[in-house]
Image (cartoon, rainbow, N blue to C red):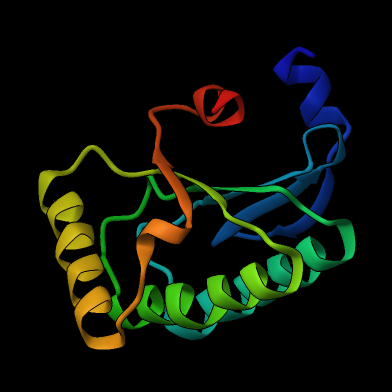
Amino acid sequence: MLIDELLRSADVIADDGIAFAKYYPEKQTIICEIRSFLIKEDDFKKLFIAIGEKAKRTGTQKIIFDKRKLKVFDQNSMTWYHTVWKEDLLKTIGLKKHRKLLPLDDLFQKSVEVGRQKIAREYNFDFEKYDIVYCNSIEEALEK
């Protein structure tokens, strides 16, 4: 299926100045694109709670999280995302596939790496139980 056809068949979850999230039934995938250089913790949680509810209703098999526009890394949001949100979806629907697109910013990427280490250490969080792949494009993320 061509990407244009896929985009037309999507079901919108969120569409505001902060994020754009859609469910693609043909791929059993939710794509969330952050549109702002910053997303506050409350807005982040609200967005991902909505995404989680949609994932549970549809049996979503993959989440693609496009963070390429972000400039500010928020550790509290990342900690909640992994230790609460991801864990809930793993337990309720078995969701393991997460594809990430990061900004082409060495400092941001290093912050993600350090943040993951902190979460693993402080929360005894096992990243290995998830299928997490970092990608360079939405097309690549859909394929993997």
